[in-house]
Structure formats: C-alpha cells, structure tokens
Length: 136
Image 1 (cartoon, rainbow, N blue to C red):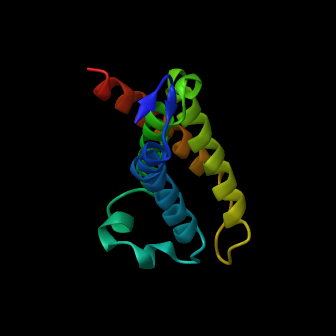
Image 2: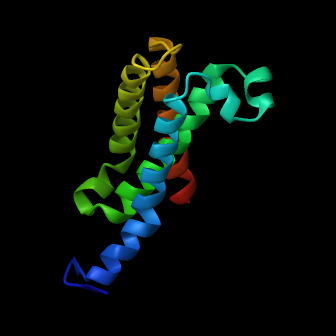
C-alpha cells in the first residue's frame, strides 16, 4: 500500500519479486552460460547452427535491457523511472563488459569487443522498443 510516496514492506516485497527477481535470475542465466567452455551444449542446436552468435548476443541483451527497464521504470523510484531507458541500456551494456571480462577466465572462451557491441545494440533496441510498446 502506498501512502504519501512511501510503500509498505508488502508492496516493496511484491516489487522485488515482480520486477527485480526476473532481472536477477536472467542475469544469473547469462553468467552461467558464460561460465561454460562450450555454451552451445546448453542450448538447442538451431541456435548455433542457424543463427550468428552476434544475433544471439543481440537478442540476449535486448531481453536483459527489457527486464532492466521494467525494474527501473516500475520499482526503483521516480528518479530512476524518468531515466529508465538510458539506465537500462547503460546497465545492460556494463553487464556485457563484465560478461566479456568473465569469459576471459573461462577455458576455451575469449573476449570479443564485437560481442559487446552486439550486446549494447541489443540493449538499446530492447529498452527503447519496450518503452515505446508500453507507453502506447
């Protein structure tokens, strides 16, 4: 229940589960897949045989940015809500950088600036696109 701009613990907990938990779980899935020397073994064959890994990065980070936008827009307060698109893109892009650094420590994986660029473009399209869809 909201009163004079403040939320009760029940409402805050609801916002955590509804908006932040999906973002955290999805970021965990990205981290898990990045920890694998052969992530293609964890995903359906068509994803690696039919699609470029840059397309996979693009889609993966578009989804991450949509989830970040939702959390920032609806559960982070008015200052973050007014900048949710920008913050979601920056957060997803920054996570892409940390993901590439993380991969440098995984056997048989390598750092790729082009992967990070695909991540960032995906994040931008995801956050902007979702904000446009939800504001109509």
